[in-house]
Amino acid sequence: MYDSGRYRSVMKTIWSRLAVVGALAVALVAVASPVGAASRGCADRFPAVSWTQVSTGDVAVYVAGVPSAMAERFAREISLVSGWITDDIGTFEADVCLVDHDLRFIGDEYVSGSQQFHAHQDLEGRFVLLNTQRPGFVGPAAAFALAHQALWQNNGDEPFPEPIAGVIAHWYRARILDRLEYYHRDVMVENFFDTESVVDWGASFQDPVQDWNPETNFRAIGDFVDFAVATYGTDVLAETDAAVWSRIEGEWRTSLRADLTGRDTPTTDWVLGVGVAIGIVGVAIVAIALGLISKYRRKRRIDTAPPIPGFFTDS
Image (tube, rainbow, N blue to C red; front, side, top):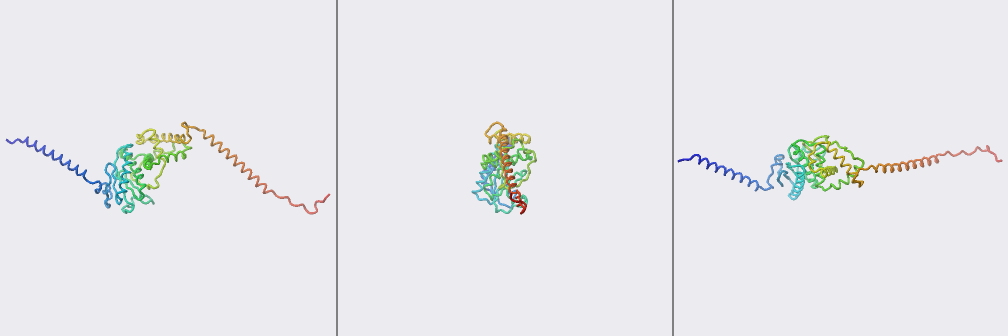
């Protein structure tokens, strides 16, 4: 006798097993696909160019016209800094498109003012476009751009306050350049007279589309974020309250003076020293001025005219 229930059960088992086999086949094809295969992330945005994917993951790197050895170097740098950012801020996604400087597909939309194209990113589109003409600037430029991407995405795909985002991005840029110690020495001298917050940390918000020149994108303010993270941990990087950043700025400036003077507690002894020095210089200037005036007067003294002949007689 025909058992329809048993037939349906067998067919259901067969179809389920076929589905599993199909899924495994798709997965195997994806794994077996070479990393250097034609990319999709940058090709969709710039279809007129032949792209090669050199790294996968949440932050994927694509190159066009870049030698393979240089492409691997750039991929390592970007992987390093994206790992830092993920650990500190949170997971994020971005396509990094690297182009050779001889590639001529860049249009006017990627030129900022009078500057030739160097770096461009779209926070909503989640991609970064970098010119590799100066190889030493590619890693730092990627660090700056990817920090912006992570802050935007971990803020609910909403603009992060500026200049907070830019300062955090400069911190990652300084880290990959290994210049934080140098920057710290630099800002210690610059901030000797300031211990109060001077920055408006809520002045604006991130621009969704950004263009900049990585060769002039230097700021020692990354030392400030280094102090904030050392004091409050990486959770502070998610802080969007300008008042909190202003308070931390005041603490940072006070610490800079303490580092410069070698004293852990705030001091105003330097005011007396500067006052004495100014007083000594002032007295010296007055003395010099009086000497010059006296010398000038002696030179201008009118000589007495000779006597009228015959007016005086000898006794």
